[in-house]
Image 1 (cartoon, rainbow over the protein chains, first blue to last red):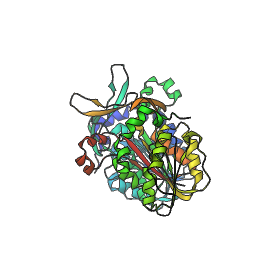
Image 2 (image 1 turned 90 degrees about the horizontal axis):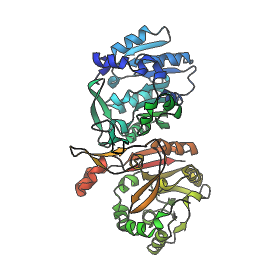
Image 3 (image 1 turned 180 degrees about the horizontal axis):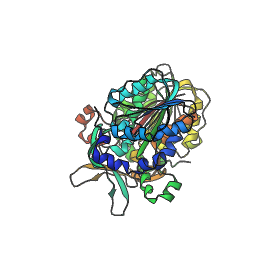
Image 4 (image 1 turned 45 degrees about the vertical axis):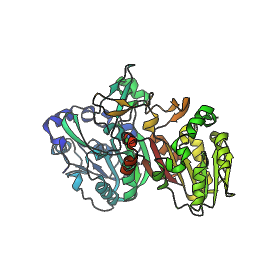
Length: 242
Length: 242
């Protein structure tokens, strides 16, 4: 089973205070870019892998999705998701993503935000997702960008001229990275961008779009600290079609 | 017109001494990976954009291509290409890639090695390439990887523990980069990986494969200095289908 860090007390407390936990989708700077990659959601049967507090599940229903299934491994997150959802067309289910089994040709959209970089056997999961989609329907997901996950010591270095750089190393050495984020020893899987796209193509997807998220001018105007996020992409956003 | 650095005397002298100039394709560490992305070349009508000394044109013919057209902007390179080629099915033509005009539906394969990062208006070129291919046929190309081209000061930094990192900054700030390589003031165009794939999709290609080149164990065994190339990818290799 993948490390279930979201049920770690310290991690959960820290995560609960993040903008994206308090404000929901609008608290996530990459959300407008990810939303732009979604198909028209009206009438669709949607699966959200790693639904967390259920923000996307509720958004999908508010925008006309017919039915939404949210899956997550975290008991704490699902508990809060259920407590803040009053909608019989949204179902939350607990499952370990590594052992995920999905019904064949059952969904019109699979969505996943910042989850796949925790999964060890991603090819298996991608294959399950592919099988679970109707032909012609979409997978849209985000992960931490490989440039972001690669370094052995992932923090800005500042040169004598004051310029910030992101010290990329080990990019082509894939595998687990242990980082301190909200708590110590959070395990993420570093994969190259080519590996992500290769997995998708191998299980039968057609690539629809790749975005490397950076802040818009407007976002930097309202949150100056976001300017650093142009130095290297923090998020990789991908859409693909079965 | 793009800077024609290959006709600069100092640059040309330096370039002529590189492994890939002396030994040809086998002197380019990324060639085996790029070759693996090519379709069966037998009987194909091939266009090589940025053919340089003509190594790939001759390889293509030796491996059964029916006809090969090599285009380059460098007079010096084309002169040497012509002097080392005895094959009436290979034609070399001089053209500025920015002004490229190609006949419609004329080629079965367009190949380009380490050229597109010199071109300013790449969408126009991609669109010409797409138009020039028969439906179902392929574009296979390499460029310097965006991680490699991004930095304002593109050289290894070494931390106190002796670990080499590649200082990525300005990744999301696309545009020209002036670097000193063989001579001073070589102009390259930095684009994100998402921009490369977006261009391809926009002009109508289907993405076939993305590789971020790194050396194999065998390559490192025979050339130990290649190990650094695992820290960050130097080359991006892409295949696409019309």
